Image 1 (cartoon, rainbow, N blue to C red):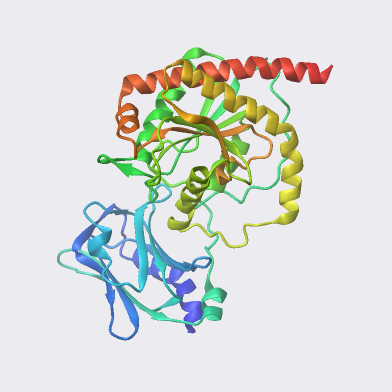
Image 2 (cartoon, rainbow, N blue to C red):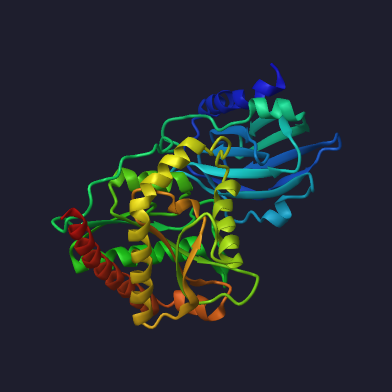
Length: 406
């Protein structure tokens, strides 16, 4: 079997072999038996100790070069990247929950590598298991030919297509709000003070949902309801699938440069309003990269033109939404960023027909903001501010749309 085909064949052959052992329960990683090292032959050896065997699959991705290992299902508690990764032939390693029932490990490759040999051994007495992979260098053409995420039902939604503009809100039905707690699963987002962005934003999204539902006149859907990874494109697809009237992505990032602090609301623009916003957009998009999403072939110039046309109606409504939300949060005491309305090329805001904004509640790199976001009373005030902003925007939007229809 050629090396090109071998990595892809592992997806099915190894999963089938693992299933033969009737692996079903959650496995725990054994950190003291897990390492990534040089193998002495210009290659890399990956060893992963597990409390029991689990089904798994392996595939590679390009742009940039990555190797992805999926497991059903692994608890990564105790595994530290700094001690696990013991070779500079792998640039970085990320691991965590992926979709429900599956876990993922992503190796960022400094150069093209392919699976040379693989073995999953199960100790018949102790029940523990060890997965061993030997990775060897390969040429660029061979790597590219075999790279790509396998298409398998249940792993992700179909790629979103350009959709027609939905009929506008006429005030006769509840406003359907899609809340998007940033990051999740294998992608923790920003980390500070012993907590992480994905956890804080899921907490706030749940609190905001309750505030909107109690107010009446709203339906609320979340892009994720637990600690699992959701790709940026999938978040947009979920909004379309739900028929959302508004999309609000929730974040609390870190900026090492400058002294960023205070809440801000972002709208989509190809050109960022400032350097800090550009860096934030890069960080958010990197979440998909480190989580093993296949980004190859994502650009489509024809589709981009059609989307730009569709955005001509949506953009003024989105700008008005951003202003209303910023005003609502400011009236609750904020604190707001010195430039509370900003723009950047956030991929998660690219739904052409849905007013979409990204709310940075604050920056975890700011001690004041971190303390605020961890405070339930402060979060309650911000939820009320967003509710008030939505109310103001909805009323003004209905008036403007009724005038257009006359």
